Length: 244
Image (tube, rainbow, N blue to C red):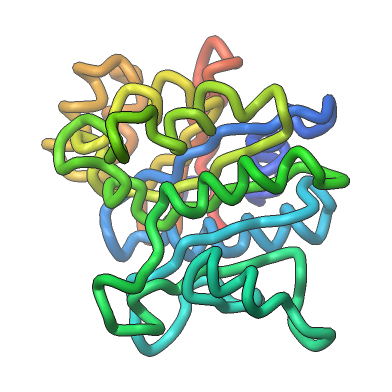
């Protein structure tokens, strides 16, 4: 039987840059139902509990009936947060934007760009690292391999990937559609946690040189909850399979 390792080692690697006061860039990648959002939820809680960040801004607008990221302060969008600051009974270190999941109005929601832009505004006055957490990063694209832009300007998501690290702005994101993501999501991610994927996604990652042949052979065998950690700072995969 394959040994499953405690994920704390992986979480330490993901947030290694925080020890120097720098932001980190991490991607959770896997087929729906295999545990990536569950893992990211526990990761965000760990980040806050261990003070790897002072504030997390999450976008979680998929389910009308329940939030996937629990334990936060829920608001529609940044405007709603500005109008209704967290009360004494609401945690101020994790804001979860629910967008259309709360309003049920598509013209009154929240975008990944909104969350990234707020992170940029806050990090300059924050006493610690700020994390932008996007559930399903593919929703921040134009349907192809480009970020959604506004008025022809560079996407705030691009700015977080390219410039966030040095100013203490981190990003954690999930996706099941790697072929829809721009190159920044792979080329600039320090670490990628990979759950089980289909053959098409594996072939795409091999072509993009985001994984090795060794990883491509292991990924289809992963069970629900299993993940491996690709760390671009390591020459080779450490051979470990993690599970929360």
